[in-house]
Length: 97
Image 1 (cartoon, rainbow, N blue to C red):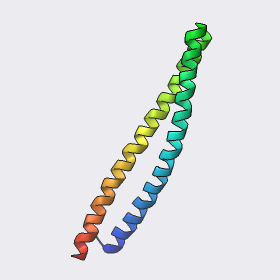
Image 2: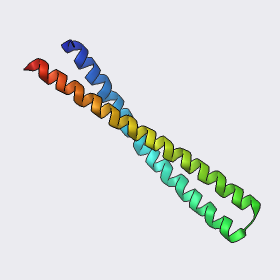
Image 3: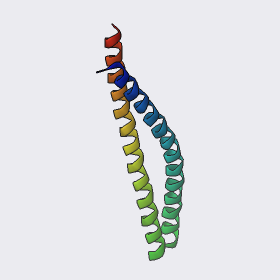
């Protein structure tokens, strides 16, 4: 692979990793908020024993679950890009040798 292409791909991967890591921080904050809301809704559901409270709990759990899946997806993409970055760095180093 041409040196310039390697450099460009490394820059692209690095920028994408930076954005994903920032997104992961925001996602973690949102997940903490949604998980807290789901816990609160669960307690309200247990105490009130009403269908509407149970529905609110189910909805809040659904939102928290969706955020957990999103977080897992972002973390997987970060891991994939880190592997790609390692491969590109190895190729870059091999060209220098």
